[in-house]
Amino acid sequence: MDNQHIMILGVGCILYSDEGFGVRIVERLMERYEFPDNVSLVDGGVLGVNLLGVISGADRLIVVDVIRNNGAPGDIYRLEGEDIPERIRAKNSLHQVDLLEALTLCQALEKVPATVIIGVEPLDIDTLSIDLTPPVQNQTEPIIDMVLAELDRLGVKYHKREIPIHVSCHSFQNHRN
Image (tube, rainbow, N blue to C red; front, top):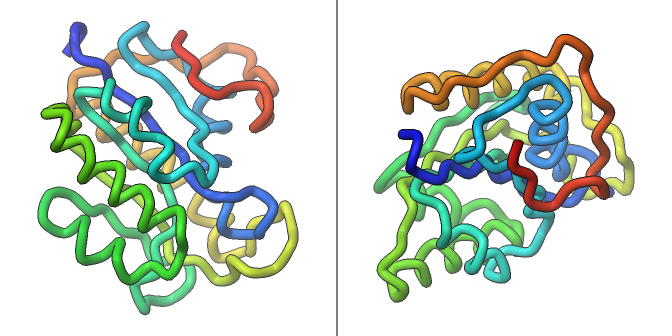
């Protein structure tokens, strides 16, 4: 896997409570861990289809986001393969539909990354707040563990930082260690 480009993409808007979950997870990963050069951490915000150029450069894509799936707030999901289009279409968020379109457009470029989406059922994506709701906040560590488990499956060697660094959504866009 050393020559494959692996991208961890956090999507969402940090200004709307749980909607910013994916970006917050990428921030925490960047603060706590060092990754090899072939792994990039990306704050995709709500760029959706505008991420086409970014995601088409990846061989493996791990997306972290909130997923509306009619479950209880805080329920955790892992989507892969055929499950992705159907589940994302029902998410009621423009950036999520645009993300699906970007993945579909990658087919035209003949560069579709193998994609896994890891997410949590939100409680609130409409309230203007930079704070995650408690049921979603409580899933931060389990989701980080799931992302790291995906990297483990791919044989990626990462290291925990001895001293965590402070990262905000504005301090990175596409970071490679």
